[in-house]
Length: 152
Image (cartoon, helix red, strand yellow):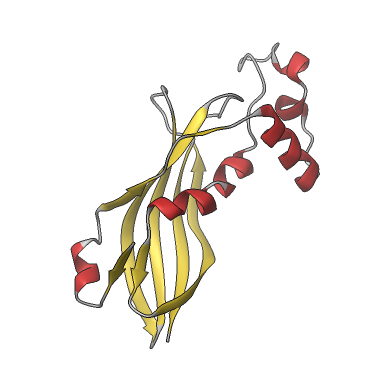
């Protein structure tokens, strides 16, 4: 895990800082997400009906794909010195580019856009995140993801 100071963080801003492992998006994951979010739209959950669509089968919810960023980010551990905790701070931009067909494999690619000390011991990170779909030309999504890190 990389730990940075005010001086050393400058060396990685604008660079790729991590790529996660591939994850298979299963129908069970999609179904569980539909139940938890109360979003049982048939393109996600009705396998027979979805076969008749242009996608040829079910697809993951865009928000399910977006939520994978939290787990994928362990591949991009950019921490400031003395960090005691970090929080998801939100998104400045999210675009869903291509559907994730159930059974596809996806992964996260992270580039550090910026790291700014907002006040002593409080660092705001911004990452450009791409969720790639294995074997596809277009990514599932691109996002500008923010995090807040707190140091002693």
